View 1 (cartoon, helix red, strand yellow):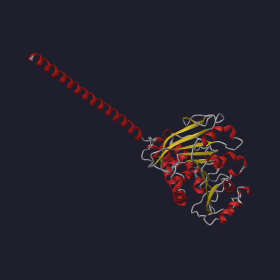
View 2: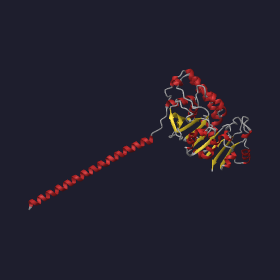
View 3: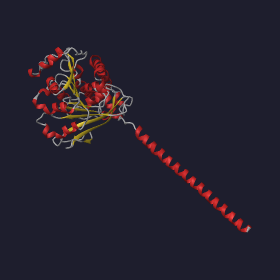
View 4: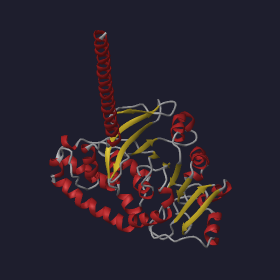
Length: 404
């Protein structure tokens, strides 16, 4: 009986021991599983943070070219230390700096002060900028609207290319930089480009608008991330190519894309420039361009010194893109006519003075209703900078309109 008792007791203890061991093993396995999951989660979290914290990579060589065009010396010369040390480059830095400082003192500083007051709400929101008939005039677009995700720009000037100064002679570098100053002469004096002058200036060794856009980017504290030539596909999407790629503009519209990063900004921005004829007669053959423009939401328009093209019957497509596909417009009197804005229900704010258009343009450009609006509106605020064709007088008029 005792023997049976001890046998039973031994079996009972053995069972308890096995359960205890099994429980310990199970607990150990559970803990190990938790550690594995935690480690995996930590790894995934680290990877997510790495992706989140990934910064936009600036291209030092492209940025160095932009700074050299702009008469500035970058911290990283992108392998062009020897070029920056040349006498021609040093002379350019001095002369360009003097010209730019004059532009800064006479116009840009006052434009920014006005912007910070009158355009604060717009610039505090997410927008894309539509700037028809711009040519390479990025400086005015950016000074008024520095926070746009994309700048959609159009002109007749070709896209062009960039030199590799590290492979060129000192004489070439000096001559090239001199041509950059000449190409910007009208901006320095009048604050707008003259198409006929640009056509000749950008057919020197300064090929097209790319160097001019680079110059303005550097002077507005931006660095270059990448630059590409693009060709629009039939659905309006851009296909990227190297800048020196030869593309057929008869096949579809060819343009330029520059991605850049502003000082103190985490998010890159982009310029899209298209050198193409946008008259109504040409647009049916360029439906991909209209599709591309319309693909950008929350657009605002910017119009300046555009030869009154938007008054003409042959530019209805561009005019309708402003009226129907954008939320606001900042323009001078060369933009959409005042009565057209009012007829389409836009709310209009006026600044400065309205004067008869300069003699270069026909009587059809005069706007009697705009003249009356300036005379009757007691809320019109003065301007302390020139804008548009009245660059040498105080007869500058600025129109800011919002779609209701």
